[in-house]
Structure formats: structure tokens, C-alpha cells
Image 1 (tube, rainbow, N blue to C red):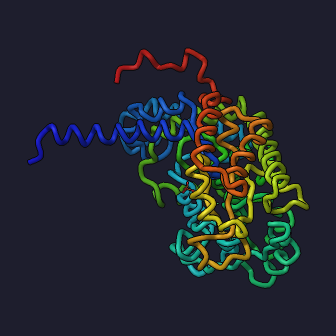
Image 2: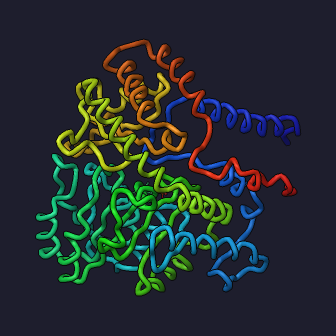
Length: 430
Ligand SMILES: *Cc1c(COP(=O)(O)O)cnc(C)c1O
């Protein structure tokens, strides 16, 4: 039997690591394109008693007792989401983006059907591939024709391929995602072959909510699915937005299909984030895209091989850089981590998958630094840090110290209600 002291020190160790992790992330420049920070109001919801409860089924039709306040919060989350995305129907119960995709595949396909999706080197997510969610549903994958010059799906070839191959679902959305996907160009061909269109908006959901990028439900998709924690600054979770026509199919695929309890603390956190999006989403999304475009052109001017210079670099939160001539994505992202700039390496369209250990690219996302209050001037400073630590060959520790000092001014989460004392929850008993 371990002594109480030893167990106590295990607990201390976890808290010690949490503390160090906080200090670390508060002193670096966070540029991972799939992450964000939640407001303190959202974080308080995450440690509430909602975390301990079960609420299977729909609002007002639960399989468990004790759900009356949870019902109020889920009804509010549904109402806010419909308003935010102007959607006929929403399911807020998927517990992640992959779960939302899988539920959509279950609702709209049978095993053996064809799913048209982007390949991973072209930016597709693993859940779109035959070794993940799409494969588990038994789908055959047909890859979208991709143009690496425009970093987008080739609309004419896509149209032809839809008519030729009869996919059951045409899937848009990706993890490397610079420009809006050609939804309206697919709609007519989809109708001709009886295909459904699903848009995996995991990366760009916060931009869609803020009326930037594109509006998939208006451009012709049947289903908009995605994660709620990338550009959408909520807790880690998923969501599906769709039409009245598909509501029942989608709901059944989520529950009892692939979700039982749906993590009620993050549901409450999501509802708060949705309210923040309604209030501040337009400003946040506009600033995010402006920041990405600024960072891209600053990097380009410093000599980096930023993709798509002939197309304005980006219309999303992302910037993609080919760093194959300066050591490759793995080496560059390791070096930048030493300098306090956190981002990830990425395959580029022309990379063979065998290059995964040191792909040609790095992927940068500015949504989190935008939420921390950074604007165009700060993008210029970040570009210089990246330059100094790589092409400029400065000592990474020197850059690290400057990064830490720079971050001190940006320690608060903006675009939130955090400063309103009504959300402090001081009267809750834990
Ligand atoms: C991140 C991502 C997902 C997965 O989301 P999780 O919430 O991590 O399950 C799905 N699709 C795309 C395009 C993504 O980028």
C-alpha cells in the first residue's frame, strides 16, 4: 500500500505540472491553428457540478432524473446556435469534431458508399480518410481534385468527377484551410447524382459565426459540422447544424448512435462561448483574418516562402509557409519552440506521406493571439521573432527572452464578458 504522503505527492505533481504549463503558455506566442483560449467565464462552467452529471436524450425527454437546470442550459445553447449560424436545426451533443463528422456519415451514408473528400496532404483531416472515421463507416474515399497553386479544390474537375463517380456525400472543409471551398459549384452536380453536401467547419467555425470566410448553409450545404474550440473559442466539443428535413436523421445518429452522455460542463461552457460569439464574433473574426493577412505579408517581405502570394496569401486564420529550404517543418518548428513560438509542421500538397517526420511546411494560426488582443502591429513583431530565430540565425534563447517580455502585455482574454462582475460565481459552494 502506498502511503498517504506518496499519494499526496502525486497530486502535488499534477498541480505542479499544471502550474508550469500555465506559466509556459502565458510566456509564449501560441500559433497552433487548431487551438484557442476560453474566457474565464467558460472555464468556471467547466469545473461546475455539470461535469458530474448524465443527461442522455433530448431536452425535456431525458433518461435520467435531476436534469432540470441542465435542460435550461441545453435549450439556451440550441437557441443561441440557431441564431448565430441562422440554422433551422442544431445538435449540440457531439463531444468533438470527429464525433460530429462520424454522426453525419452515419446519418447520410451506408457502408460501401463513396465519400468525396480532400486527401491529408491536400489538407484533409484524418477523419475524412479510410484509416479513421470515414473508414469506420465503411466508406470508399474519392479525393477532390486539388490545385496546389490556388491551394483549393479545382471546381471544374470536381464537377466532372461528381457526375462520373456518383459520390453519396461531398465533403468540404479541411485542416489546412486558406480559402473558401467551392460549395455552390458542387450543388447542381450533387443534385443531379443525389448526393448530400457536408461541410466540416472545424477550423473555420468561429469565422463563419463572425460572418467572415464563407456561409456554408446559405451556399448550399446540407450539413455543417465541426469542432467548437478552434476559431470558435469554446470548450473542446462538436456541433452539427442542418435543415429541418435532416433533423431527425442527424439527431438519431448522435444519440443513441455514437454519444451517450454529452459532457455537460462543456455544454454549459459552449453556451457561454456562443453568447460571447453573438456579442463579439464579428469584430473577433474580422481582426483574425486581418491579422493572418498581415502576418503573411510581413513574413513574405522578410523572405519566407509564404504560400499563395498571388492570391493574397489567405482568407482564413491560417498562414502556410514552405520551409523546405531552411531545414524543413520539423526542424523549424522545434527551433521556434525553443524561441517561444509554438506552431506545428505540416505536409504540403506536393509532399509524399512518407515525409511526415519532417514535412515541407509550417502551419500558423492567429486566432488565439487575436483573442489575446493582438492586432496588426503585433503581427509585425511576431514575424520578426520568427525571422530572427530561423533565417536570421539569432540565439533562440535571446528571442525567447524577448518573446516572454512581449507576452506580458497580452495576458487577458478579450472578446468576452469576463470583466462583468456578475459572472464571477463567488456565491457558488464547491
Ligand atoms: C480538428 C479537426 C477535426 C477534429 O476535431 P476534434 O474536435 O479534435 O475531434 C475534424 N475535422 C477537421 C477538418 C479538423 O481540422
